Amino acid sequence: MPSSKHLSPGLVRLVPRPRWLPYLLTFLCFSLPALAQDSPTLTVDEQCAAPAYAPDGRLAYAVRRILTSRRLEIQRDDLWLVAADGKRRRIVNGEKLVQGPRGAGLVPFSYSIQSLRWSPDGARLTVEMLTSEMVDQRGTTKEGVMTLLLDENGKEIKIAGGDSVIPEGTNAAWLADGATVVYLQEAVKPKLLFSVNSVRPLGGRGGPIFSGHVFAAAAWNAKQGSGVAVERDRSLSTPPHLVSLDLPKETRLELATLEGYAGGLSLSPSGKKVAYFRDAQVLEIREVEQPDRVARLRVAYGSYQWAPDERRILMKRGLEHRSGDLAWLVLPPLASRASPASAGQATIIEGELRPILHGLSFRDFALSPDGRSLAVIQPGKRSLLVYPVE
Image (cartoon, rainbow, N blue to C red; front, side):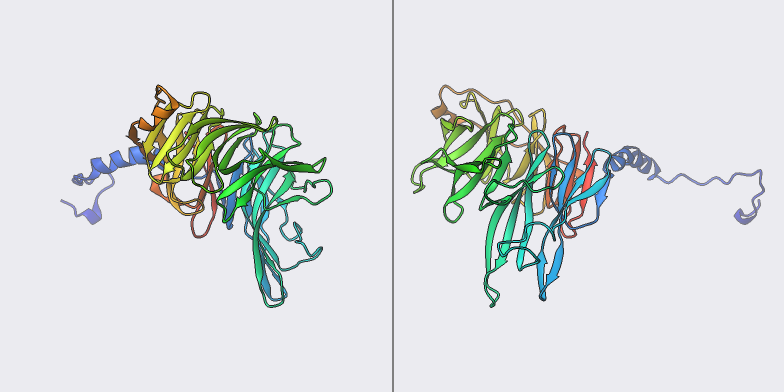
């Protein structure tokens, strides 16, 4: 019999099939489609932050930019936009944006973009920024926060009688009228309670609304001109109250007295449901129009975003802007109670988490309004990746 080195062309060498081959074939059959689905449709190898989808699917994000002035390193983030066809363009040059209180020129004034929010029509943006300003020759700095108003092309929208920023303004949103911005300002330090304010840039008019009331948090439904908030007294001596807000009419309605509030207040896309963490381990969901309809899920604290159908939420466990894995949390039906007071007896259900993207950790994320696209920021390098969602 010829050796294996000299097989004739007409002969076939038989090799015993390894016992593990069927398992390998099974693994490949089931894994390759999943791997293909987990391939990003867009990758941006920059230090990115604050991804935010417009109603039409465009994606805005910040890119960290460090400049040098007088031997000082100054951060002035750029702002980029990804169009529906995938083309990217820079709409804000950080070096030329917001020159700081000393006037024109590159001055010892830094900012980093923390969050972006689109108007309901996708024509305007609010940009929340952390700021740092050098106030004397010894290098003393003053930290702060402000909100910048831009149009979709990155042009500053100036407030009549001033510039394009709202000093100390946070959680700002354009309402559907395209003329009004609502936002929070610190009322009880340090960042314990806030007042609700509004401004109309064209008229330059604005100020506090819901006078005499302060809130631990607020969430907006800009399209409907409404919101929900967690109201507290200034001494924090009474239980928190969940209230609904009619922003144009400046009226409020108490919905429920809460046993506790730990953060994460959010309105569903339809504005019909509100969710928040009652404590670090329990997420509570209520109907806005029938607040005695409640569901409670045991799940670790994290940031999250509603799916368009409102049957599940996408959660990143851990604190905001800290790395954590992403998982879908399936929401149970809300159960009716005899009265809002008895809702405190609602059963706590164990949250059903379904990890995605192989359980990898990410610093930040954004789900598109149609639920078909997911943008994530990697930890460390902070590259931006966009994945399809099925």
